[in-house]
Length: 190
Image (cartoon, rainbow, N blue to C red; front, side, top):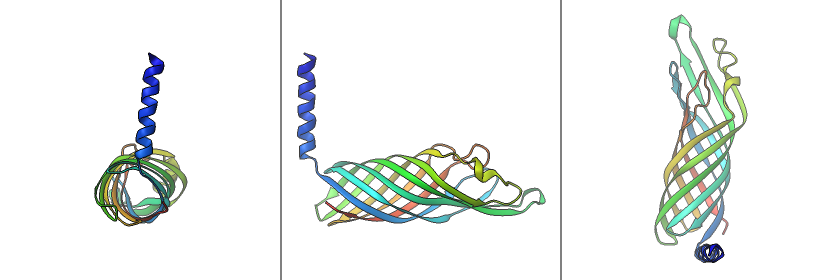
């Protein structure tokens, strides 16, 4: 009986996979990131993103991605008569796993998507001042977040606007979570 059920499940999976449309492509864009902190005034830092995506499905789709990004944040404080300002930049490897719904035709298609994202810090640099010197070394290498957004496909050109929120702290001692807005343009290779 187990072999029969396994065979039926495998047959269903193969038939769904055979009917599913698969697209692969490249993407690049700009992001505007901000790191939240309890006692510091934060401002946005402009960064980049570039990488690959796959889209599996038609009206309901799964979209895994792999891309590099440059993110970070700027900080200012004037508490206790101690003024300082600084910024930190990260180079990250990002892996979002998005589920989406598309509306429209093949040549003009509107989409909404959401899902988790895993971010691994490849490099960091910063200038945070003497008052919190060493804080740049206390950032976590791995972080989990989420992305929600919308996009449009015009032929082979695809464009997305997404919000990314942090679910884990990027530093236990200094900064809390990183959030960003990202605008990207891509090209479906096939």
